[in-house]
Image 1: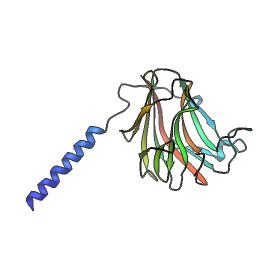
Image 2: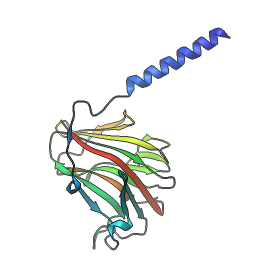
Image 3: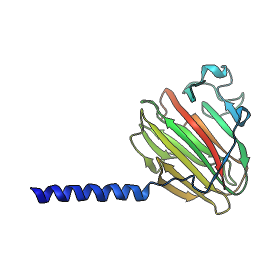
Length: 213
């Protein structure tokens, strides 16, 4: 019995050390880019005031939208969204987005953060929530069981090397080639996917940062 207990303790120590090995600070070596109120450019359904789809209280930015809302401008055929574009834009170098996200239970089929712009297409990266799990677009699962908890998101875009990385809670979950250089910037909020969206979609964000090397 004593031997079994010792083995269990050893296993816990090994697992803890393994987690410590893979958990890193993705912002190490980066410099913080100062943000002001003018750094945040909002998009929301064109026929409602911003305060009907967005709030900013006690450091928390709350975005919400309905699947039958209008697009962000007249004549657009895009899906409903309430998002913020975070300046500055970039075209080269190594840039990073950091923020803490909260997704309430029931939100599904919603992009919550993205890298907009690319040489080919409109986006370099979209991270969507489907039934509490995070996917890259509607494909690879990046993280699971994210409803009703704060979690840290870091996106690193090395434009010069054509690489994108995603960290969730300081653990690298995804790495891929990008879609080529372009006029690039980070966005977060909620943006309905082309299909399988919930009627109501919401994300909350705090401690948003932009960093660069």
